Amino acid sequence: MIEKGIRIEVNKMNTTEENTYKKGLFYTAFSYILWGILPLYWKMINNVSPEEILAHRIFWSFIFMIALLTFTKEWKNVKDVSKRMINNPGLILLLVISSLLISINWFVYIWSVNNDHLIEASLGYYINPLISVLLGMLFFKEKLNLWQKLSFLIAAVGVLIMTYHYGQIPFVAVTLALSFGLYGLTKKLTKLSSGIGLTFETMAVTPIAIIYLIMLATQGELEFLSFHVPTNLLLIGAGIATAVPLLLFASGAQRIPLFMVGVLQYIAPTITLIIGIVLYKEPFTKIEVMTFSCIWTSLLLFTLSNSRSFKKAEFKLKNRNSLEM
Figure 1 (spheres, rainbow, N blue to C red):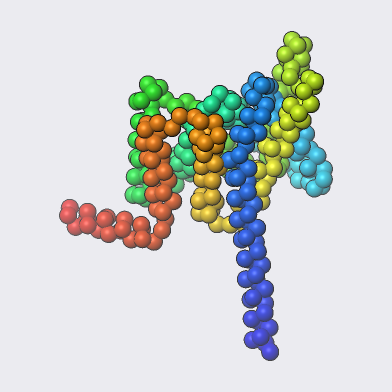
Figure 2: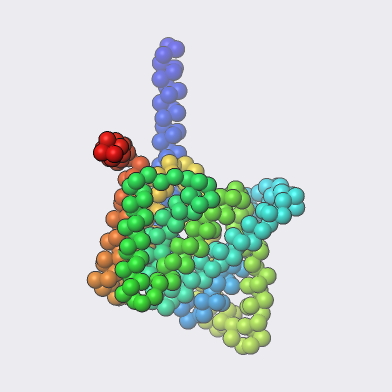
């Protein structure tokens, strides 16, 4: 009877863990799918300037988060964070930097979508995981194995191919990758939940967004509250379109292993790339094929770098080199 009871409890635990894993997988994958199709949303309001879209995205994200925190009764946690900020000015500085970085990222992404640079934008988010690892090396002394170093070299070759062909650095891709990578670094340093973190980040830049919208209104250039109702609704919905994937990701990432998050993160740029090529007929020449081939090879190598077979191969290679010396 005791053994039977133990088996039932173990089965319950296994079922609970499996359900948690499935939820985490769904939430995380769905968040990346939403991020991948987000360009379709911005394309629907491409008659509005990227600057005004950004201002609305900031303002309505802040309003949405205030409503969400009220609904979920998290104001106690907000007060606790506020007290931490009073006693730690460094945290305030990090949140301001974080808000500026994510604002830059949002603006460049909106601009790239509405100016037919979707393919380059997807390249930026393919590069982003490698930037994050590089920042981990610089700030947290994280070490790379042989295969990971090789993956960085291959990715660098891909970027150099595009740079040489166009005669300039792919600024959209590099800016998106760097801004989001550095944003991730500040999030790691502040250690705030995504909801509370996003609330404070948008709060920091909301006054600037409001001032900019007022300035547009006084100049008669404000698209919002024009007679085009769908545009007004889409601008208001920009807050929800921003916050929902972020909250889904935060909820899902806590339930699944980090390596699975790493695999799933390629969903978004892949969808964006397909949208750019198939729906909006952006050119995908031999140069783009060469660049993306390098990036995809790099990411595949990087993803597999922690597998047992790769670690064994690295161990054998090191032993061979030491014997030759």
